Image (tube, rainbow, N blue to C red; front, side, top):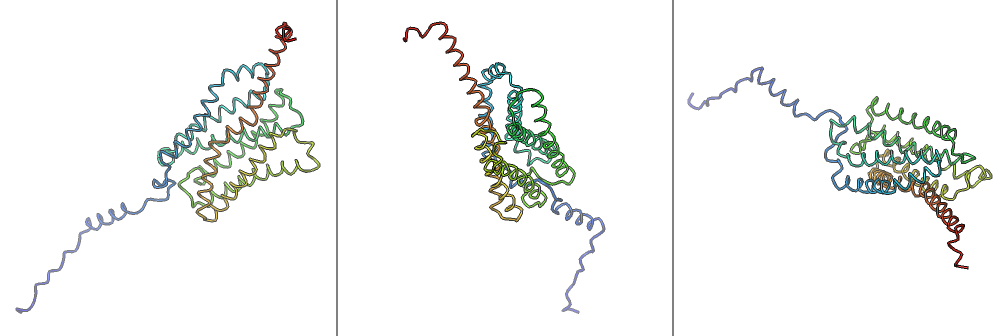
Length: 304
């Protein structure tokens, strides 16, 4: 037939060819679930904005280290010495945490980042809880017995907190410390529970302060200013966690902002509120002692 066209049947692909196509499709499929999202990793400017305030605070502590050690040795307060050492420990951990933000985007550093975040948060929480526990006591004794009792209470709370979060992170693979992961329900459930406990604790202290049992609390205005600030911060953080758990985009941004402020401002705020007053009082005591010695030696007799 002259009008018939020559129809060529394409060859059937062999088994190796089908296998190659199947392998190519599997290799191009999306990877399994992971914490890491390179597009949401913090950049250099964010790391610098976190690290510079933390580094300045460590430098400030180092600049006054020699003078503060002399004051602590002169006063011989075991409680203040312990808190000063714990402040140094928390400040160094916080600085390290701020400088290695890129670990969140490195799959090989996943365990290291989680461990560092867990230890850093636990150190700061231990400082926060032990300080409040000490100030809530009826006396301000500086003996080892008071120090051991205070750190026993805070150690139990912090130990339970570490254990619970370690189970979440390493047992159930909940990305508590991965900022790029914003849709995991377990993450926001844990942070909501954590913020609720802290908000209720500071709220209870404020309630007692304005009740008939206020005499049980320490008569220090700086302590109540600290409690008010921490109540507001934790309350706002709790609100941000609830928004994030509900899928509201503003809640993610708001929670990140609160975390940024906490890591850059909390330790300096705590130092100024409590330890700064202690060292300033020590300076006044030394000045009065020097004045008394000079007065006894007759240096001011000519003024009369």
